[in-house]
Amino acid sequence: MKRPVQPKFFNYMSTILETVDLKMTYRVGKVDVHALRGVTLNVARGEYIAIMGPSGCGKSTLLHIAGGMLTPTSGRLIIDGEDVTAMSDAQRTELRRRKIGFVFQRFNLFPTLSAEGNLKLAERIYARAKNGGNPEGRRRILKLLKLEDKLHHKPLELSGGEQQRVAIARAVVNRPALVLADEPTGNLDSENSKVVLDMLRGLNNEFGQTIVMITHNPEAAARADRVVEMRDGLILSAGVPHTDS
Ligand SMILES: Nc1ncnc2c1ncn2[C@@H]1O[C@H](COP(=O)(O)OP(=O)(O)O)[C@@H](O)[C@H]1O
Ligand SMILES: [Mg+2]
Image (tube, rainbow, N blue to C red):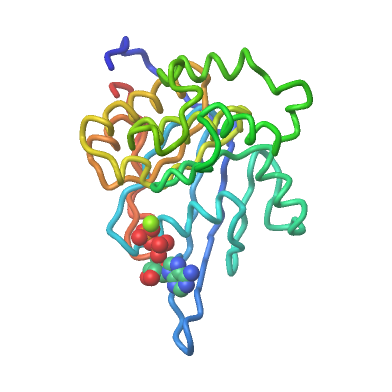
C-alpha cells in the first residue's frame, strides 16, 4: 500500500507501553529457563513496532507479559500510565479487557459464531454492547478490513486470510490502547500476508492504533515504524523509527 511519505514523530513522553528490566524465568522440572533476562522497552502512543529474533529468544513471553497474561519474575510493566506489576489479578484482567487487543497466529475465532458474531462477542466482553454494541464502529472496521460481505460467514466458511482479518477486527473493535500481535501472518501464504499487513498498517494510519507485532518476516517488519531485535532474552537493538514504510 502506497502512502505519502510524511515524517511521523513520536512523543516518548506519551508512552503507552513501558517495561523496566523485565525478567522471566520458567521452572521446568528442576531446570530454570531464563526466557527474559532484563528487557527495557518503550513504545510511544501511535507507534507500530515489529519485534524480530530467533525462535526461543523470548518474543512471545514478552508479548504475553505486556498483555498482562503472564506475570514476570521481576521488573515493571506500565501500560497507559498504570503500573500493572502492582495490580491484583482482577485488576489486571480488567485492564486487559479495556485496553488490549490480541491477534494470534492461529486466529482463535469462535467457530460457531459468524464474523459479525465474533465481533459482537468481543464488544459484549468489553461490556459496551448493551444496545447491540457500536454498529457504526463495527461497520468502519469491517470496511477497512474488506469484510463487509463476509459478516454472516462462520470461520470455516472463510479463508485463512479472511479469518485473520476477522481476528484483527475483533482485536480492535473496542479501540484498545494497544494491539499485540504474535506472528499474525505466520499461518498465511504470501498473498494473504500482504493483505493482513496492509490492514495493520491501515489501522495504524487511520485510527492511530498502537501495534506491537512479532514477526519472522522481514517484509512484515519493514512495514512497521520501528524494528526491535531480540536475542536470548534481551533486546539487542531497540531500532530507529523510520518513516518510509
Ligand atoms: N510455559 C513455558 N514453560 C517453560 N518454558 C517456556 C514456556 N514458554 C516458553 N518457554 C521457554 O522460554 C523461552 C522463550 O520462549 P518464547 O517466549 O516462546 O520465545 P519466542 O516466542 O521468541 O520463540 C524458550 O526457551 C521456551 O522454550
Ligand atoms: Mg513465539
